[in-house]
Image (cartoon, rainbow, N blue to C red; front, side, top):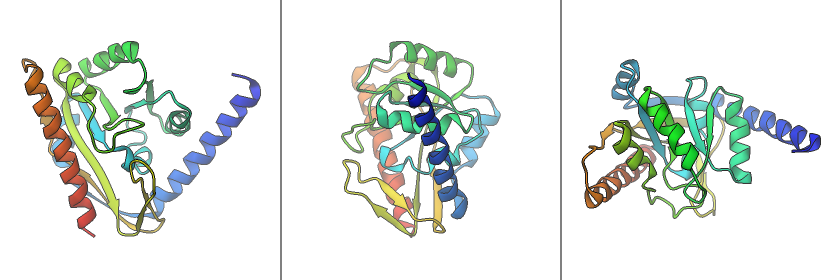
Length: 216
């Protein structure tokens, strides 16, 4: 990476962090369902937070400075997110459903084995929208980690005309953040049972999003 590119990405990271911070700090936030999640973290249990790509705008601000690790696509769009996250104390792993994650998979397993916390975008960087990739489920199966669905919504919001119908909320809006019930994936499931679990978590996340939206 050239000096110019480094300066460019540094500037993008600072500006991005400021904009996300402004969006986040200006909202009136209410959090639901966090009791069981907090209990798991206090007990040092490994947690995989799963959310949809359409609901990532608020996540960097919400989970900032918690020593959380995020799996981020190595694409150009992913680099923008990585630059923002790195300035809020996130540990970063670079990989996605469309890129090789062999080494990152080993790192994710080690992270879960020591009781870490990982954020995964469930439908990946390219979709299809609201179709959960199997990675989070297989990681939970291999490590005993708990899967925690997460979403948010806002009273004043707009859905962009993107593949995921990205949710853009307006500054100074009322916003709710919602944790779903933590889910366990047994280690001895066969392939069909893993698929059933994947679908179950997918539906839970869809229902959680619907509940959040309808609360306004």
